Image 1 (cartoon, rainbow, N blue to C red):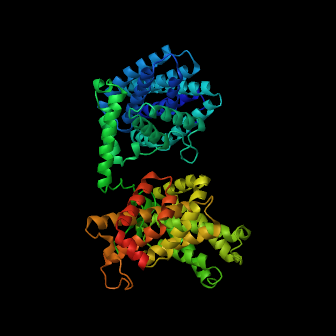
Image 2: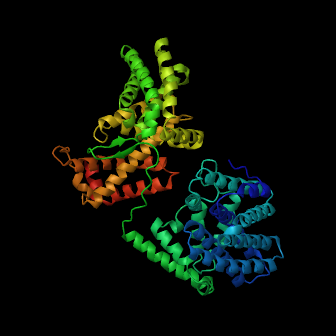
Image 3: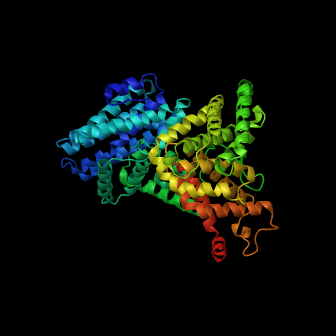
Length: 579
């Protein structure tokens, strides 16, 4: 993993890395010190008009650099070339005014923006340019306060680690990084330093006094700082407006901030009005790892991934051995099921999964239930941890369970899907702050997905039960099963929201038609009953789901849109209140 602490280590890390990585890091490095350009407003040697022009030019360079990383095209390279010329001139002007420490900081922020645009259109030298940009930016923050330099390199290091984790798609992951908050902590959350927030707030307040629609520049940078769509628009509208601005020619930009800001403000107002009048569905989040859910049966049901033909052949012998051990343990549990009901149910479900032919085995389900078995084994081995299991396992059961868990690990790691899930689960469990944050809102949601007979079909509930039991016994912290629980909630909720939007497209809305006051749902079409149950789930657990997906912008936006759709049907809410 990356270990970037200074200019030399950064230049060494960049060797052999994709050009897209160098460009996005140059852009983010420059944006981190953008608030310092506001210091030029303190420079007595520049007229107010010239101060505004310098800030406006840096906004131009910074926004075009960002667009070039987020939506890379040949047009963006040309736009960056023009912006670079302007940024160099702005840096020169700031340098001429650098009679004070404040103006010097503004000059250095301008120079960082110029270097970022330079990296966009000099791909062959991008790595070198990026190193210079980042190093200079770090030096500038160090001048502002010596303690800030380490924070800058730490932020750059986290960006580099983000890129390294997705090395198979260098251009796509560079575009993804462009969307993220500029200052990330170890949990991938927005963690802008106080000095950045303070400098930016002061800059935005000072700009607002000029009455030239400067809010469009301030709001755009706020979006970059927080890692959300530009100006808070829907993703499609945000892209449309950013490309429209970035593709404007040199003469348009040379009209100056008063005219350009006003035109951008007009476009922004038009898009916001259009967005408000149109029910736009956010981009659908990718399915991701874990079981896939659907409503083909009229209830929520899960389907996992199957092994490849080669994996099935290679794993056949081990599969038979694990199945035999699971059957033996299941027989042992028959006489003690009353003492260990959670464990007995988990073993029975695990055996059911194993009883499928090896080429049809549900790898996702096997991984989830096998992981729950391991957690339950640990709970019985250390009963003082939770004090909920009062009867220790007998030696035969303990030995059989331990042997099964060992072989389960070997079986799962023989599938590519299993390796991916284990690696992701370990990474998730190490993120202790995030796991702790989602634990409380996750408990009632997972309970509902396990026990709700109207919403979830029986076989899927049986799959969820061991996960819920294991988490209830051992807790969510530092557990692979916590990731299994999260995936169950995420993928189930994704399917429920997709089902709701699909029902809207099929004309099954207004939603109120699915609510039968005081009469139950008997006799209504299956799709209407399923829609009602999906709505009830989202209404009952909306706030909890939004808390769970706080750090997943795509899921948060998708779930929020589904909840908004329901709330728009006021008659539905009235019927539910009366019922």
